[in-house]
Length: 188
Image (cartoon, rainbow, N blue to C red; front, side, top):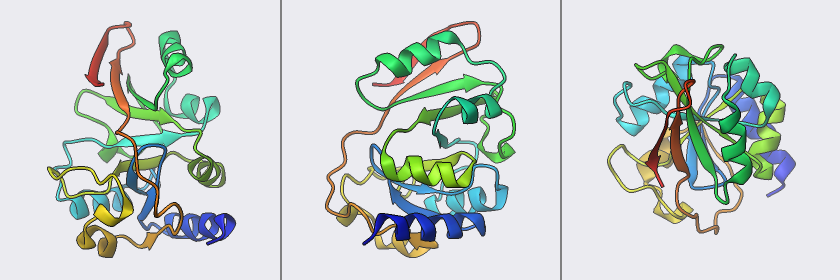
């Protein structure tokens, strides 16, 4: 399949409030517009996940980051620059994002993405993209497309037809970084 066709199709579904199944820089993900509460609610329902368990969002750079966070610790940029593998940071006080993505402690997990498909999709969306592993809550995250349950595949509005043979690495490292520079590793 052609990457540009897949970008167009995924973007159209997201723009119209749908949810997609797509390859990320780590595992296959379920995603939608991070500013659309109805689309986010569809993902929680599909994953059978409590909406108190927040999901992460992908962004493609500084401009999008500063639209969502008015304050970003310098250490955040250093962690992203120095990380050898995809790293998700949980940061304080997000804004311009759907309320049902924000954790009870007013934080949001974010990852700056360089993977070409996701990066281009974010460029087209001009908004953050929800990213959560393509599994029912509590089940293992699938490492390949073949491991994704039929329930998930049938439950999304569009399945991106790229990288179906890719074996995914581990999920991202997750680090909580508060505005007062407290650091806590959640997942290595």
